[in-house]
Amino acid sequence: MNSDQSNMDLEDVLNAFIMEEDTGKPTLLRYLIDYPQFASDLVDLSREMTLGTEQSSGPLSKTDEAIVAAAWERHVAVVPGGSLDPLGSLLPAQLNQLSAAFSLPRQVFSALRERRVIVASISESFLRSLSEKTGCPFDRLIASLNEPAQPTVAGSHKSEVKPDAPRKVTFEKILTDAEIGPDQLAELVRGE
Image (cartoon, rainbow, N blue to C red; front, side):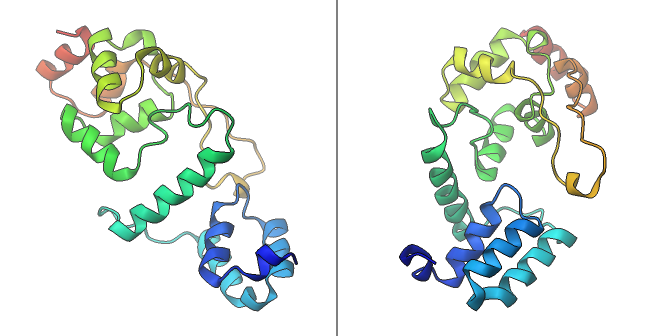
């Protein structure tokens, strides 16, 4: 154990564990060896993460938002070139604001964030407005949205089969699935 590890308190260790890309058995064992004084808490956290907990549908508290923001800053610091994903870097409260600004359900922005939308099917006016509201340069936004769709990794450790990337669909299909009314749908799809 190095001196940095010996100075970490329980909350720092648990937060570090949560931020691990894979929190499976090998990672848990490594943490148990490195932090034996927190073994019970690490095992409890690992069980909670494995079993899943009921998610609150309400907004994050200011403390939770600060923890997420700090973790994201640490993450961006080690990612070469910083965040290249303008929607992926938004906090839940920011996604809610974006959703309200466009008067669209969050599921539309989740589809964009997960790159499940064919970019050519999105009107330029919507993309320019999205670029403006996210503070992301237009070209960078387009490049990010054009990247391949990513498979959902939640629960993938429980499957023997590697998850496939979702199939991209038109923006109109995403809006229709979100039950957007015909007038707003026409405005968004055609850029009217």
